[in-house]
Image (cartoon, rainbow, N blue to C red; front, side, top):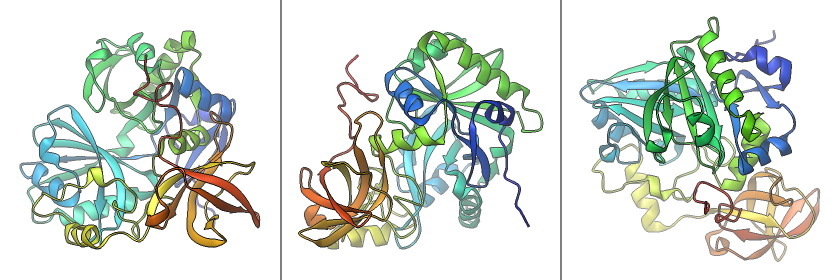
Length: 378
């Protein structure tokens, strides 16, 4: 029996303009005009993504901060109202349940945005551990659209149609504005490595998508002067890989710890108690057996997930994500290798179709940060 895929508010637009694929129980566009042109639009100007398939929950109540500090690794107490942080939830063994962005809307009220493939799992995990706290957890995924406007011209594009000056909202800060006469919530975050915003349109459903469609079309119109492109999952994947951002299920999972993934900055071991802390303290003391690295191919070839990483003919690790970089015009990858070989500029081989192809280990992001990314020189 076939399982009908879920749709977002923009199903009509996607069906008319994009190439649709099945993704995490949704029918989503893989591309519109093409992955390369969409990728370069984001790196050089601006693009817009429909990311409504992601999960969104509101956490509120007198114990909301204490509860969140128990279930996530970062320090929620450092968040001021209208600010955000990247974090992960871990199981008791230190394995990553999911990664996400947490925004503090106001005192005792938070918005958590996590991966679409983990919507059911994460909600169950949160509710399971909420029993001893005075906290409410509400899944608002079905009543809120979500778009990502990304690229060096993202701020200018949105300022064309925003009721407030968005230069006031700095990186990993949040705020409300009006677009097309509708109240929307913005976070200055994203999954591309570029500057940009994630735009939340509340009180709209797939069956009543008018508000979401209006905001999407208004942003597209505002971005015409900057050659905005609607972007699909294909460009989202190549952009995040160039930036060194993990994809759950490929690069991180419940058998991977934040220390192995080299995102230790989201783990605050000074907190007295949180899920997975004991295991992570032990692993930090003993050392990890593998570390995440970036790879740039030195010879023609496109690495793929599962490709072996070799040194002197011996396997030292495996690729978890690989692609052709539209910006660098070479094969690139994310991999886990033995710690002794995780330093940058080490020459290795990647096994591609039974052939060993030269590559070098590199730090993320893979691009020149003076020319690309949110910290580029203006």
